[in-house]
Length: 306
Image (cartoon, rainbow, N blue to C red):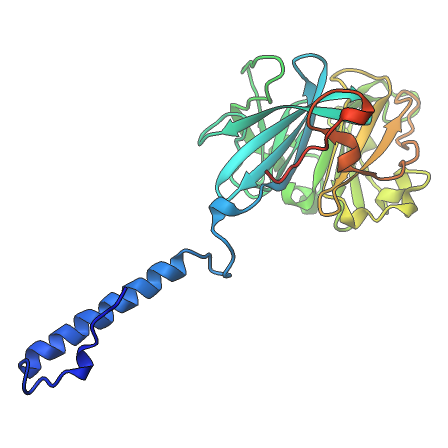
């Protein structure tokens, strides 16, 4: 656009000084507006607009019954948009893409006040920002859909026997539900294992019998080869255990920056021993998550950014 430069004109011969001054002011304002509009096409840090950014991982991963078997959900965001990517297990280390669920405002499948939360297989959603725990109540949903949540309580109300310093959902990055014997000769009951990956700590919580509550010095204490993993790099965790089931289960740890997943397992939960089996070697997301089912040679890695 060519903007007339009136400063080159002689106001004494062409325009009255007062009129000329008013026009100069309008032109300066117009040019300033153009500069503002151009600047607003970029974010404050000079990056590309939100619409062009890639999808980012929340630290929220969940395993639950899928349409055909067992599925795993990743929660992601882009700007203010939220989606849930659904995968189904082909075997315990291979999954293929099923669906992408678009989450609208007030969607009961994503009830938290920010993108900072984690979820358990017994359908509790932890909001780190508001320090609340959401759960379904009497709400039902179709098999294969992500869990729905209709009510909430304060974290400190849900986990009342924790010490005052620990009663905050923001202290943790993940929580694994289990149903086990927390000590020798004890009966099987609900248990929760909270992970603080940044500080390499865990907190073991048994609501049915809080005398069994305990903390570990490090996460590595739970795993025979735990010192080989940099737990501060882990972002999220989930397990494929079932509610009320005391048999073995698999545990998945995710490093979203490196796009790696670690697998561990528990063979028995009835002997009062909280230790897991070894953590296996990290697998690349490209090895684990596939665009569609098929033979090994025809599988295409899923692109989480698009």
